[in-house]
Length: 525
Image (cartoon, rainbow, N blue to C red):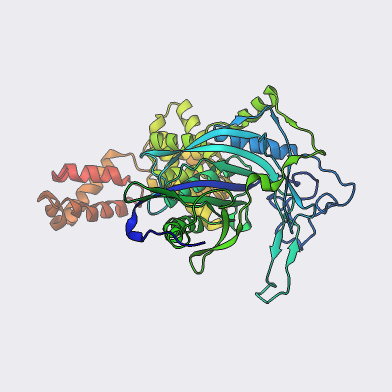
């Protein structure tokens, strides 16, 4: 292939065209078409420690006479994701055999869905992320079309090096992963940059984990991203050429996803100048990502659809989804993850990072909702309850959860205890610091009565105005030079006075009320 006759100076602009394929391993107990244990199931005690080629049976091994049987739970999990992505759910979908050489699938074909996928024609509105990877919930969103989300089975693993990095003449095959339920989500080419791809990947992973369909541990391959990237190269004089599509395979980190897409967008125009290849039949290729060198590496020329020789599988009946089944699955989906994050941001005044942290674990999100709903039903202002409940869970709760390696809702305190802590704070009976201390005490004793705990620990604030006034007067007299600075307008000096009053009260005074009282007396408010 000869190169193009153009130079880099002839390129006026490059228009990215990026679609995504995302493979999600579904966390069912058994594999897609057999009762063999699935390594993607969180409760599979054998999954991480299983010796190679032990999570297998005659179906996985494709032994003569072994027939597949569909996993209903995997279908329902896929429907949940499809509904969350605003997809249509097919009333009839079929299984097809996708045939080419699979060294890690003994039957030499993959059971998948081609003509009639389970989920199709959806969309997801994706917020942008900032330099820290935080969602901007207040900004514009990119609508990403979902072409299809279809079920198939995962392949096994081929290892080309010995454990420890030793050289190997040949390859080692591990079939433990073979047959694991795999949901492949295929988007429209609606992305224009690496940041959008990463934002979509992060949001999709959160959605799938929130729906309970996957553990989402990317290091274990539970979610793998495969961007399809090419460009329209606009030339001086009005000419346009389209570069061949490159599919980057099996990216299992957001960093790798962003770097691989950025690299291809830089390289494809240069590659076209060098080899002159443009998009057309047989021009697609798959490449791997070498993270150490920061480059993509050619693996093979990619087949077109007809090369896979799809045909309906004769051993599996179609999947028929009636209205009752669909309604039952839809009822379990509930409020969308992004809508939930938007609600948290609006009602509790949270930024993108805080709303994400609150919604990331389903149990924690439901706990927050139970606390706020309970307080509002009891007459507490909903906005105030939402703000205090979010602070309680995201500050004292999240810190303790990170220390213990659990989620916030797994710390041990009860929703009723959390509600009482918020009520005490909302009534001005305890300080902000006392909220965290009380939460910690409740984690150790879920049966404890919160107000009694606060009283025993001296956390209830003094409500005696006379005593507070006296403490303030004493401190103003003792620290007269500091008090004078406040009178003269140096308001920040009031901090020393507040500290002295709090010391006199043994921490039982409300710092906010102390500040207000001091400033009133000194005329610095």
